[in-house]
Length: 133
Length: 133
DNA sequence: CTCCAGTCTCACATCGATGTGATGGTTCGA
DNA sequence: TCGAACCATCACATCGATGTGAGACTGGAG
Image (cartoon, rainbow over all chains, first blue to last red; front, side, top):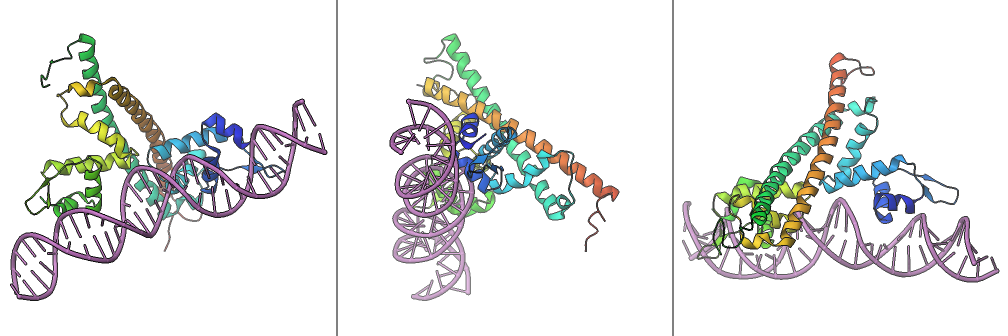
């Protein structure tokens, strides 16, 4: 498919698809006329990339961890480079920290929301509960 | 405490502490001489803010969810504003999506790492583990 | 053939988070 | 009293992700 379709199907501006390619997060073939041509698989890839970007990872890191996810069972010698391994371990731990932080705060927000919605349901919201105008 | 100590104890540049205050993510008193003065509690607050920033939330959103976390049991009438509730629900769901995405990818990275480290342990890699100088 | 929609590249603008430096006031110990 | 080490504000720079528009090519529909 060409860039317009990929853009529509992933909800991603063309500009960003070109940017992701420049950052080597996605790849494309070129048709005879120079147009980019993507495979179906690129859709999932784009979604994944955007999810990671949204979760705060920079393209530099995403580029490094993506190869581990494509070919879950294929391990390449160059991947075993000690530096790369250290990077991956660091990022794994950072991701875990992020997850914990997000989960804690998400739970707190959810709890708060439940409490507020409870009050609304009971029509107790006026002077109610914690009083305090 | 003053800004220097807070900076050291949170590992956060002074510049950013002032920025967070400008964005209303943290608060400070002012001493007679105009110096900022923080309470012990500000340390946790800063850590929390930085965690959320690192997880991809913008200051605008952090500012909105922080009040729900401070006073877990105190619900204020103004918080029950339908718009605010909608915002919180949206953010809660976005955070959940982020968590899921991060967890999936973190697990994949971890799995990959385990596999690579296994190989190294068994010396099955290429010509030689890492053997390297 | 012409028009229009899609694509290309390139360059500049914006936005949020962060770095850095200038300039000046306060505190404190040698 | 002087200098070092704080602190203050203000302004400008940077960096990554993203927006936007110009100028040119391609290809299919009318």
